[in-house]
Image 1 (cartoon, one colour):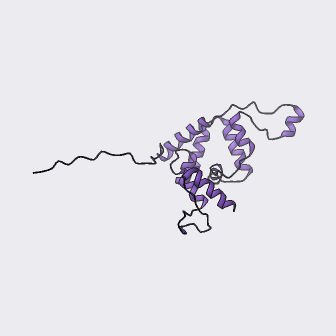
Image 2 (cartoon, rainbow, N blue to C red):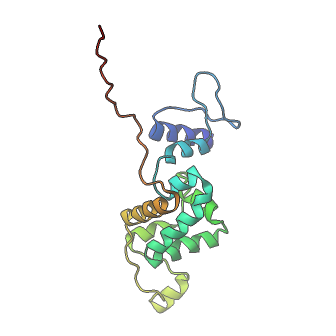
Length: 178
């Protein structure tokens, strides 16, 4: 049921068409039948950032992820890598979670955007009244997007979103021959 709901919401929200979810995928009846994974692939396929690189070719996830971390303030590396190690995921698996719209990441992942740094030990902070780390700089979504896009372009050559519609082209007019 959860898969069907997720599939339906993603399909309608991002792709403009309803779908039916099944274990095997493929077409059945007159509806478009697909898996949640293929919905993400269709949605992210034209994105120029980390998730786009991941869904176009999972082997690009790790180099784009590492490049992105190097291009951003150290707090991003500390936060993302801390979460990744805590949940024991490889970089491609972690990127897959980051790009999965139905996964709730830990609070520290989202607090990064507000300039709040989570300490490793809340007890230490409460007992001393200070955190061992200095206040975190706010990292904006735009900064992360720019870093992801630049790294993806550098590593994969993918620079812009592919057009969703074809632009009309001029056709040469034929002159009648006598």
